[in-house]
Length: 224
Image (cartoon, rainbow, N blue to C red):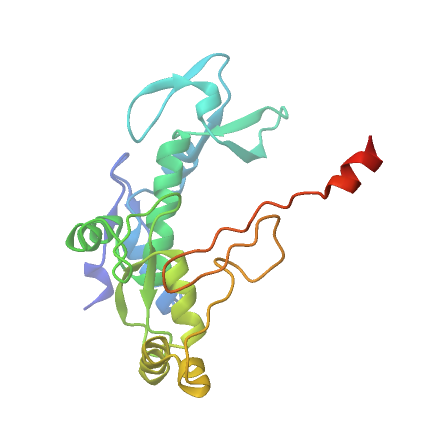
């Protein structure tokens, strides 16, 4: 397409956004995504601190000034600046930017995938508790596979996305090689294998509660 047909105009002041000189692929992508000129971006992105409250440029709600994140720049009079959007909108903008830069999906597409999975991890089927589900992708091809919790995401990393390793893990859990080697079932501690105040061991009939230790009569008399 000829360069003379590639024109973009600012949504705010309707001034033409100039076409970049000697553009690279990354610069062109940034230019295509732009919706405001440099002057309007400077005016929209940051503004002076107000004493009590401000109006978010994204959600258009009036909120206390403490609900707006602080910027790094200062004016000529050393007056601190605040972003023109509140912390919630700022966080959502950063999340949308990260999703697009890393995975080339939008926040809306993320929500579509999450709804398709029923709001749960695609592997363990548990809903997220603290953090959002991570976007799982093939490290070799970049293919987006789904949304998983951080525990399952780490497990995939430890398995290095190998189907053979995953199948070997399933065979191990079903096979119990220790039982096959000893010829009988053995049980150890319930929970993590470490010294505890209360050592509970497993059995075929369920956990075995430890007996309470009782001091001998001679020891009780000596202590008195």
